[in-house]
Length: 347
Image 1: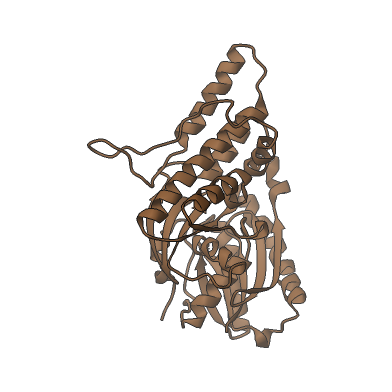
Image 2: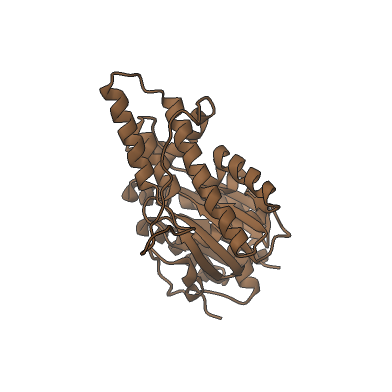
């Protein structure tokens, strides 16, 4: 049994949580969305400064909400990769300081491993092996989860991540930021069959397509050309129909690849993580397809789909229970493959 105070500052949420194994004792998330909306996206330097202003209050709030004292905490964790370097440094420095002051174990956590563990928070009986579909603003991957820290990437997008595509299409349609929730809401009133949009495929040498890799840049370009053609014709852009057609195409593409991958590898469970896991279109498509193939599909609660520290704490608690800790010399990395997770720990 390990109890961890965890900090997540990889992008634009200042989050702190206290987690006991897979039980969330407290979870604080201070979103910066209102700050970055005026820029149409996250400004790294602004995000870092906002973390500095918020981190101490978030730590105090997490401790108060949990009713847990320092002597009950076994370790301090923080996201160390991947993410915005300046933002990561704020959380990592705070975690190291707390670990030294309170003489606790320190753990650096991979952000994507955190998204995998988000499902554990609502599914305490879930254990590897299973397939993880990670869909966020920066990453879209199919991961074979073999054990704690042991992962194999089976497929990924070669360009834009799913969440990034949602943001870019929302900007194209002048809908604002962040794009995912806005498009999802609009799609509820639109016709998903209104426009035929292409699913991105990655060609293989000699012909054929990679079964699990994908691309969203072509889909984004197709939406751009559709909008340009409608404007050229003098037609009013049916924004809800465009949003619904785009979302339908993304959900259909992700579902096909995830189901095929699970079946090919003999995995009966698909756990979805990341901000796009909150998308209603993806949930509908994947749950229906999984039922047809007698597969189990699991989504985290909506509050644990987007960035949060509870998933980081859950990850760290599992590593700590296995004797994994990180050196205080550990730095941050803007990019780090999920398959290199174990380099963060000394055993």
